[in-house]
Image 1 (cartoon, rainbow, N blue to C red):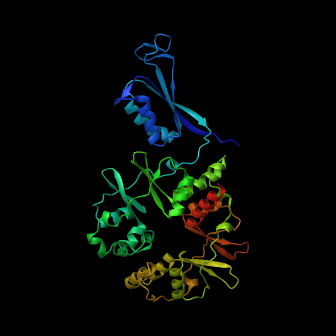
Image 2 (cartoon, rainbow, N blue to C red):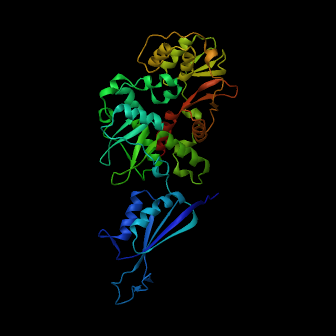
Length: 417
């Protein structure tokens, strides 16, 4: 079934001789459209016409030097045309601009400009690290580009804060920390003399605005990068894209795309193909101290609670244990647990109780035969990083991880090509 999408058609009528800062205006408009990642632009030259001045322009014999009419046409989504329209309006001092409704079929690869976040939070290289952390937590973002004189000179991610600034707790755990303890575990004494330029990653790997989603996926997978700035050809920052943005684009497109050749070949694989089988498990009567040791030792940061036949009974996340300590109303115990979770402390924490008393009974599962497109959509809809894979009887088979899926998509697409 052919799927038409609503579009806007932007037509700009100008004279061939019209200039903007010495360059032909039609060249300037086309270059602006290209810089901003518009779907495409075409220019046609008329052989006769007149404008508001009522002066006839023609390409007839003996009048080849006249100022002939030029039409620039751009077709794109309504939102992108609306965004580009003020740019064109500011450039055109003499001419006409027409916007029409239309429908189209785009036989184009999915590009980063379609999935990136355009409103980017940035800081300067001299920004105090305390202020950078406060900004990240307040805006609920995981990375911030460092800008100097309009150019990207670095980027600060949650990983930079943990490894280079010795931040006490990773960013996604702060919402689970009691409000009265939150500042204590998001800042530390080492921050006092640090600035953005001291811990930022530099130089910065970035994506061009017309990079395909598939190529971005490969770059992120091979270099293990979670977030990348997106720039125009001249280096202007246009947005930022995360692995979640890339997977979301693949998930959305797989549900509606009439031409699946725009997607990575690996999207046709199943959960079984990317199954992570080394999943820590525990019985419901297992002591919590042992569960904590398993959780810290596993990159999955989860322990699945099963019975003797591996039937899934529940799951324990690191924040489940944190809430257990919080309920004991002991700031000292909370601080020790946070130290263990960030692997800054190795002394076992005093934690009473069993796995069955703490576990979450609602476990998000998928079938091993679920296509990756469905797995991706479930991960995004539920806003989780991992899903448990279970058979028809509810027995544990393994786990699928967002990052492993992304790497599998990149690898399979590379083999397909």
